[in-house]
Image (tube, rainbow, N blue to C red; front, side, top):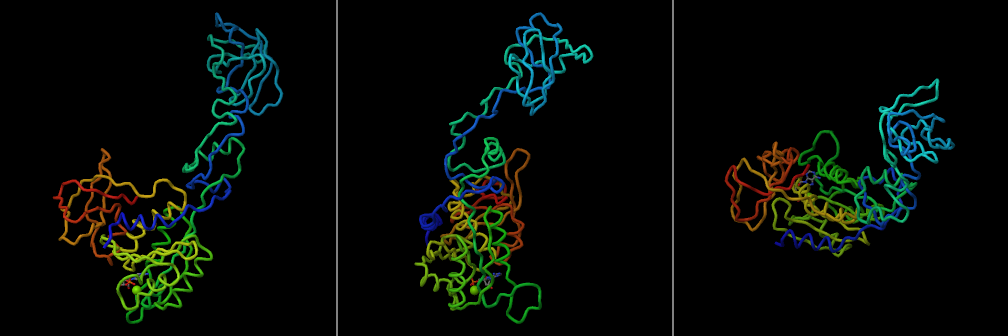
Length: 400
Ligand code: AMP
Ligand code: MG
């Protein structure tokens, strides 16, 4: 057996960040910026008012309250507007350009407007710059706004839109083909013939791919033959950036995923010192990595979490590949007979009012018992030799 760290290093050393693609901003949330972003425009583009009110010459307000002549009204978006001279004011709406001559705004709440007389009474003294947003206060041309490697979220898209960008250069979301292998597997809801079971891994893995922010591509269900598995991998490599298979990587007589990957993908087969998800195969077809996950439903999910997801995150340009580990209080005793493996137990629970996670078993811990994995909000990490009493502290990997 090899350690999880060694297995991960082997895989992470062999996957590459996908080449950058210019992508419409509307699709960029959750993707990673591939180049430094330098501003080409000022934001705001011109000096404007932060408040509805009256644009004035600040020096005129000394000795307020006092009355000024109103020379016009300036709406947001106005292209022409009157100059404001000493003794004058312009009604102005939030976002409207500051008129020439004015250097401050008195908020409307501190004024009384006499429309008939075209005058305004200003109640307070203001300083130059009051409620004025100057050009370039947020962004100046030439500013390095966001560095390559930034995970783009809503605000980043907004800033890019504000400087007139329609696209961003990002690492694309990996397109991940998912294939199930197994002669015993059937799709859908028809009657089961003797020995058959329904394929659940493909459904789960496609959803895990989507939850991780990648694009899942259903490569179907293939029988346990070298020909079918070879065809699935070669076809998948044509249309996908990565392939995930489940099944066929153990010690069984019909575990052909290993055999095929060995032939077409310079495969490494590993026995990782973890439970569940000990067997794992990895190879690269052309430049498309193939993750051969074990078939047991819980094993395939845990293998995805621990092995495939970090590698796919690397391909997608993320700087952080692994889920964070947290300390938690366990409501059940943890520990196992010595087997040289780190166990990943399916746990329910979440943070209490102090943010401290409290976890308990999510149910049956067999690698075929998917219900507990489905309910799990975290995996408890239990290295060989560790024993934690109920109420003690353990390490968890939150899954939510
Ligand atoms: P394998 O890794 O192919 O030896 O499969 C291990 C166990 O997982 C067997 O009991 C299989 O029937 C089961 N299994 C394999 N693939 C799937 C799948 N796609 N959905 C549900 N169970 C599966
Ligand atoms: Mg099988």
